[in-house]
Length: 162
Image 1 (cartoon, helix red, strand yellow):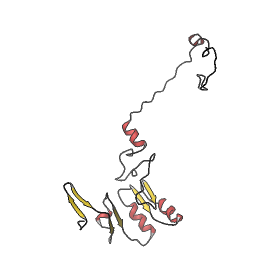
Image 2 (cartoon, rainbow, N blue to C red):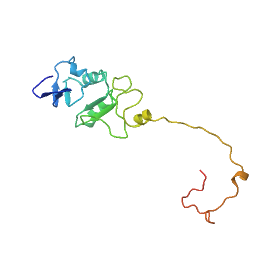
Image 3 (cartoon, helix red, strand yellow):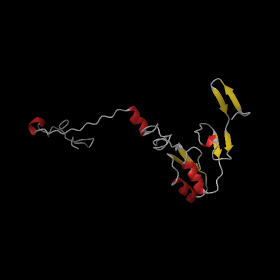
Image 4 (tube, helix red, strand yellow):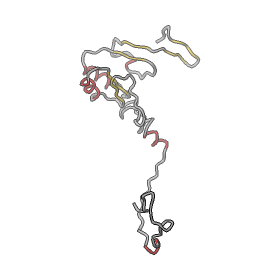
């Protein structure tokens, strides 16, 4: 991994944007989750071989395809086993209000929720549900209807009844 573009720092190394052309399916970088500007390329002979490699990955966070054919995109996106799918984008991270994260059964699933969207709200919120049933008040308790300023006109179009 060390190359002329690797710069040692006090906290580790910085690796410039890198393309890795793999020669074997057993290359370590194909089986590790790599964060950074790294593109791993492994040439296959068939689409099914590509899907088997992608779906055999333990992470299942994201998968993408580059194509000019909608049918090809549809074929792959209906078979990828990942939480975020992209067509003609390198990093298929959705924007709000959609959640970021992998699927259940993968190493990229962050517990029962996701780290953004509704999952984050659920994580940081305690929801309280109240179920009640009350008898309707008697007309003696309610009294006679009284208009506002002598006029019962309701400008908000809300007459106090749901």
